[in-house]
Each structure stands twice: as C-alpha cells, then as structure tokens.
Image 1 (cartoon, rainbow over the protein chains, first blue to last red):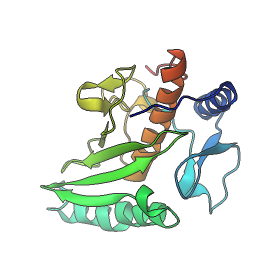
Image 2 (image 1 turned 135 degrees about the vertical axis):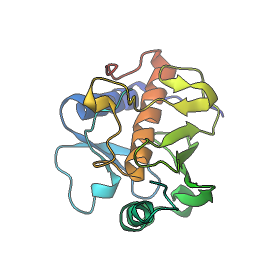
Image 3 (image 1 turned 90 degrees about the horizontal axis):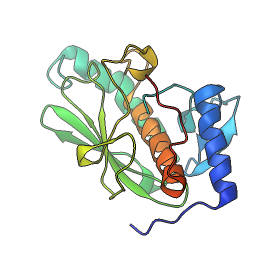
Image 4 (image 1 turned 30 degrees about the vertical axis):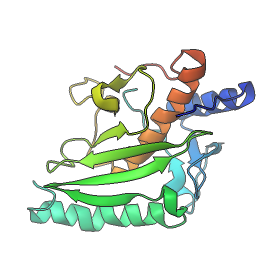
Length: 60
Length: 141
C-alpha cells in the first residue's frame, strides 16, 4: 500500500480525539458513508450512535 | 454455545449481531459495508475502514464459541510491524487474562460492530504511529 501520511494538523486532531476517547469520555464520529474521521464529541444523537465510537477502553 | 448449532447462538445472531450489522450498513457506501460469510461453525465479517487517507481491508472472525470468546480481527492490507500487532496481522485488542476489566472482551456489553469500531480506532492509532513512531494511547494493563 502506498501510505499517505497525515499532515501535522490532521495528526494533532486525530491524536486529540483518540486521547479524548480513551481518557475523557469523548466519542469519535465516523463518516456514515466511508468511515472516515469526522471529529470527537461529548454528545451522540440517536442517528449518530452507529457511527460513534464510544469511550470504551481497549487493551491497546 | 455454538453460533449456529445452539438456540442461544442462533438467537444471539438473529436478535443482536445481524440487526446491528444491518444498521451499520444502512447508510454506508457499498464498498464500506460489512460483508458476511459463514465459515464452518463461525462467521466472517469482511469490510473496509478509512480512518484518514488510507483504506484498509479488514476481517473479523466470530468463532463458534463467540460471544464467549472475543472476535479476532486482522488487517488484510499489509501494514508495518508495530505495537499491538500480532503474528498474521492480527490486531491485539483484548486480553482475556488481564486483571483490568477494561482490557477484557465483555460479551454482555459488546457486539461484533463494536469490534469493527475498535479496529477503526486501532488503525487510527497506527496512522499516528506510522508518522511519529509513538502509539498515541497509553497501554492498558
């Protein structure tokens, strides 16, 4: 695969969302159509729930 | 309990797993939908994830002993050796022997779509690690 790296701003936004998800109960939202990263949020609507990655810790 | 050979397993599939997969697929572009395939006494989910710019082919296997045993998820797209990656490109997501409940798969709380979402989060961590050499989340115990 030709890996396309993140730019600094994208990497920071994604890192903040991942850490917010793990440590501060933020949900990560995926795009409903293609699963791409949308952002992080404290509140998830019923419509968004299937595309929201809740703050459930995993091993990694 | 076997997924296909016990009433309990069939009920789990029909009332929990299949409906939530259908909901996941509902507004998804065709190439990003979860495809289901029976594999012996288990079930295979094949799908694509695109956390950022890169697209990954992924499969999650539900063994016949699922949901008691956690699903196994592997990347089919070649990725670099990195933290939390096991042999065969298996993503290390749960440790059933862990003393921390947060590191263990809980069949009462999680579904196969949660495993898909966890794979997304793992791949997002990989994208950060690929650029920085640092896994963005602290290791669980």
